[in-house]
Amino acid sequence: MLHSRKTLLSYSSWVLAVFFALLGQMAMAALPDFTNIVKNSAPAVVKISTVRKSQPAQVPELGENQEIPEIFRRFFEQRPQPHNRQGLGSGFFISADGFLLTNNHVVEGADEIAVILQDRREFSAEIIGTDKRSDLALLKVDGEDLPVVKMADSDDLKVGEWVLAIGSPFGLDYSVTAGIVSAKGRSLPTEEGENYVPFIQTDVAINPGNSGGPLFNMNGEVVGINSQIYTRSGGSIGLSFSIPVSVAMDVVEQLKESGHVVRGWLGVGIQDISRDLAESFGLNKPAGALVSQVLEDSPADSAGVKEGDVIVKFAGREIGESADLPHIVGRTKPGSKVNMLIVRDGKRKTLRVEVGSLDDGAGNVASNNRDSERNNGGRLGLVVLDLSDAQKSRLKMEGGVVVRSVVPGKAAAASGLRRGDVITSIDNKTIDDSEDFETVVGELPSDKHVAVRIVRQGQPGFLAIKVPD
Image (cartoon, rainbow, N blue to C red; front, side, top):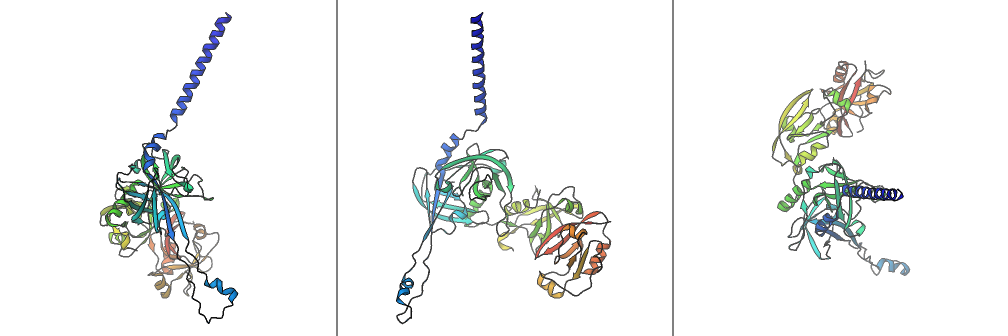
């Protein structure tokens, strides 16, 4: 009996051991294995070292008769020596004959560019072309049978996928980091306010030196080029951004062909639509790009686009938010004729537009006219003045009224209107002067949001204001 019990316990222990072993194997099987990706793809990734030569400061020559004490004279006679600045980044070969891709900011201003492979071969590189708007640079080395990466279709990338980066952070050659895709289509406007790259956001650890390196999917294919990080410390905090490879290869094709990149251009100023603005424009939901400005003689102007139109589809692609529009227009070939679906006065309308070329395109007020309902600012809580001829000329406007004061606690104050704003339309009705303003405001429907177009510090935009009972 005792022997049977021991046998049973031994058997139970064996079953438990097998169970936990299988459980461990299942857990390991659920985690990604990056070893083959690194083995097959790392040889095509390169370290890029740059040198920027600075010129010595110009020191005026001293004449023999200049009255400078001898003790100080030697300081003036010394000539500062040039100091070379070095930079580091990453890149990868896209063809066996030596074309490689990196970031523009890695090589910008460089006098010398060295490309170092994993097997320690080193080449001097020349710049074929750069594109500052996408932060991409195409380089070329004199080589043959070089290792190359495989390219994916970044449009197929899904949020939540595992991705892998290889680069040289802080000069630590061929470091490998992994994470997941956190989001797609992120808009990161440049210092000039341009926004032509729908960035891939990941939580992959990217640091200085990773710039220009590849981002791989689990098939070992490049889906993006690591370009930017968001950080408060100078190092990775889990917010990194990559240029989609579909954008990059379009840039590469143009750089190879002509040495520069041409983008589509529409000629409109746009903004996001809030829930209140959506209601005022007769939309079911806050989606699309609200046109706040149409440039004169632009493709949009020629197509009949008006301020206050909401662009909801361009070239067959939905516009979910305003940032989607420049991404799509920028990649549309100049000269192409495409359909654009807009919402105007609550009704959908299709316009035909010929896309232009981006490279070809593009205060303090006071007056003495009568106030609008001087005592309390009227229905909206606004006191406005007509624009003078000088103000119209300076602002390049034919009409409008300037906000002289905003009554606290009333509708205008709640909407965000400020003193100095110039109002050009309310509820899609043009405001040329204070008389128009009084008429339009008096006819506004109660307890409803309406759109107010303003120009603030030279920039047009829309605000939603809720008309009181």
